[in-house]
Length: 183
Image (cartoon, rainbow, N blue to C red; front, side, top):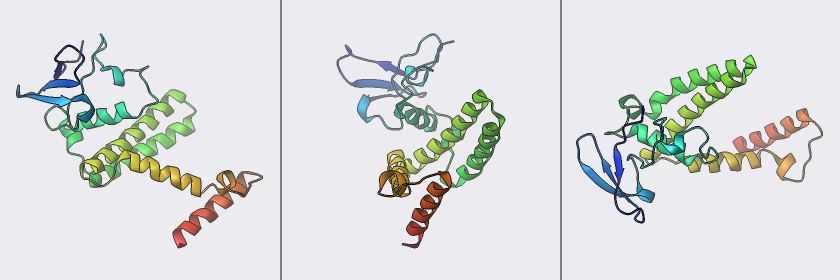
């Protein structure tokens, strides 16, 4: 059954505006590139799943998943439970999903591993979107921060040092980490 779309496209396709129709019947006109906290104007197929969120879509791009989380938190179109999440309320679900992911990783069942890692990713993205809405940081800040940290903590990969084995690599990693904590 196709998803009931809370949007409709207007115009001849050359404009970048979309008319979003909320549950109240109120119409908002938004530019596609500036939509924030709004429904996203993607066509559905017979599956009822909007194109960016359908299996086989461009999974290399994190943006459609980010936009889906924002859609779920939308006060008019979204899910009340997702919309009620706060950073403070995200800790326990994240720990629960991480524990389930750890069990799945030990199971050897690739399908289960993938599913549980997805649940962890959902919780991470949900917490990041909550932080964005509060003006604290964005998912780009999170990615930039962890990227810089990984480079700093791998002097044996990105610096002059070399690790001959995994134990030596871990020692260098921990030394770099300790240097960050003390400095």
